[in-house]
Length: 122
Length: 510
Image (tube, rainbow over all chains, first blue to last red; front, top):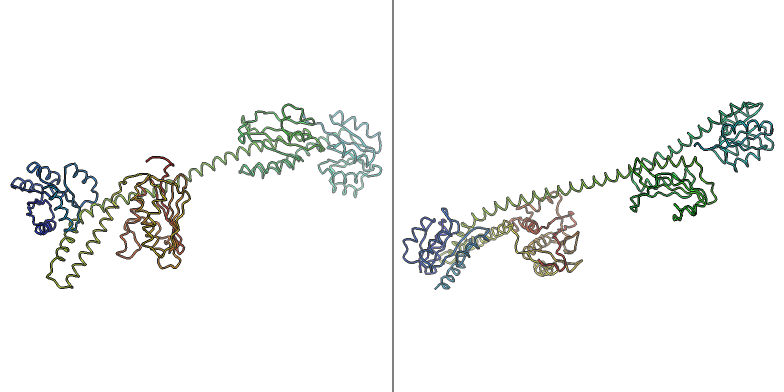
């Protein structure tokens, strides 16, 4: 199962790498909206997008839109460290996101959440 | 028309009396006569002359004795003594006893008439001066109630009246329209204007004087003498006029004073309210800016925290380190979790938008909170009381409970170490609001830090026992609910924290 992870924080990306390894997932990484655009364009298959809500050059929702264009049946999860999440949750629901990871998260719990989303999608 | 003065002429020689009587009559005086000392005294009591002209050599009681006895009974009586021969010792005694003048016989008729005129004028002035002196202190009174009581007392004293009353137009909304004074003597019940006033029926004579200043009639002054007393004369009406004029002016002053006082108090209240609002605004602004800062800070901290927590977790999963290292990593994990909780708290604090409001029955909310709280404070006596068990407010129950739990937690910390620790929680209506008062008998809060306790990050607890956000968050929550939270405390005796919310009317929907 291939997962595209978009986050500008190196530590988070490394953590996702560990989590992917543990969960038996293949992880692709992008550090901003521009590289996410390229990664989506190049990818032949991708079942899940996990994108940070706030990217250095744009919104995670834009990454989600691009991803959906190419992979209409793919799943999207948002991650955010924001404290005021009411608006983000609303946006996420409107965009049909399957889940939101709130930072800081426990990697085990987050992985369980990711796997639940994948299980529901298949 | 000036009042007719009455003069007593007393002389043992009737030939002296006749021309004098005629002369005084021509001057417009009413004259009565006496031929002896005793008769003179009787006349003085019965006829109440203003002036007595007495011969020193009256039979049975001499002029000096008449002077003494008459003035003992009527100190205002003017006494003129006449004599053909006035020994110095008698002259001295006469002056000492208050004789107005000594005249040599044969009496010059024109001179006597002039003397009487002067004496009456002097007496008049003396009366007015007396009225003025007696009333001056009274009319300086600016408090209406005291003023009216004092006017009644002074008027009764000056006019020798049994009953004095003042009716002000504002008392019952009826404005007396009469502008003319009235002097009523006898048969008052028959007078159509006054027959309904029961107090006047008992009186033998009354003066009813309007209290007027300019065009404004403020009320009426009624002065009554009981049956059996001498009826009022025109001189009394004049005195009443002075008293009424002064009373009217003083009443108006008192009313102005009262209005001014009310305005000053209103202004004071407005000032206090303004100060409170400023304080609240300051606190809110402080909260809002710190909230913004905290929100940004929390966002920034969440990424590194995710890494710290996440990698600590992965390190814990590895089995290639010593037990000491494992302990260290566990510590990293635990402490970073704690950081995460602090950030979570900031999240609450930063979120100043109100939650979902709904009608909340306070009794149920307080009881639920206390149930939870009791588990954490088993040794504290907790006394809830509900003045009105039906009180409801429009609130987010979770947030309200958060406030209550925070306040209770602080109360518990304050009573820690006491053997008789007690926390009372009282819910009651107060001025259109619902008040929840949490009182502890703990250590109290020093006055110096009382003003800071709602400040964010202010805490007196040791590091790790609280970030100093609990009451700030509570303040923000109460503010969002159009309510307030305040604290009063006496060091060493305890603290009361009061949370107030607008009351939801019984039966009202949200």
